[in-house]
Structure formats: structure tokens, C-alpha cells
Length: 102
Image 1 (cartoon, rainbow, N blue to C red):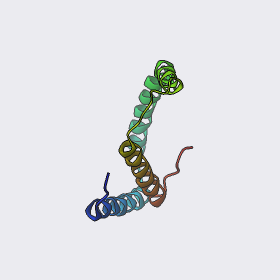
Image 2: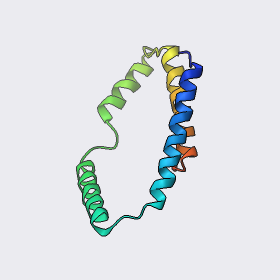
Image 3: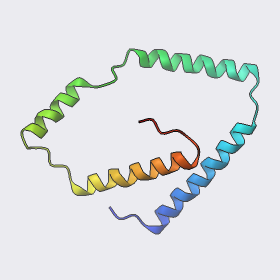
Image 4: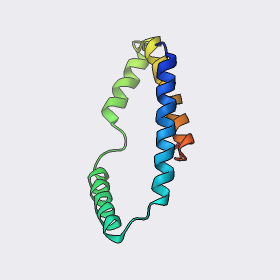
């Protein structure tokens, strides 16, 4: 996968916009009604996620078997694409002051 200058500029533009939004959001006060609404939405999300498994064991097992059998042959372009995307995401998160979860 070739990353063009235009794509790089688009990512940089998004980073600047996210940073500006983050700065603006930190200055904007919430009223109690907004916070209450956000808290109830977060509670719903947390409840729906609590029943979901953290790891899809069947999928992990199938991939492990494929690797063990020597049949896992990812395309180099797929690997490169994932590396570039991960790097861009990590860079964006750092620049807009989000903490990366390890």
C-alpha cells in the first residue's frame, strides 16, 4: 500500500481538527442534565458490554490452528497497511492528548 502525500495531509488535518475539538471540549462546561444523560448512556453501554466475552475463544483457536499448521499466509500489503494505520492512529491519539490503552 502506497501512502500518498495527500493522505498524509488529510491525516494531519484530522489531527489538527481533533486537537482543536479536544481543547474546545475541555473549556466547555457541562450542565447537570447533560452529565446525567451521558452517565445513563455510559451505564447502558457498560451493561451491554459486560456480557460480551473479552476474547472470542473460537476465533483465537481457529487462528492458532492455522498458524500451527503453517497455513497462515497474510499478504505483506495487509501487514504493511495495518502497521501504517496503527502508527497513524497512535500518533493521532498522542497528539490530541488521549491515553493509549496497552
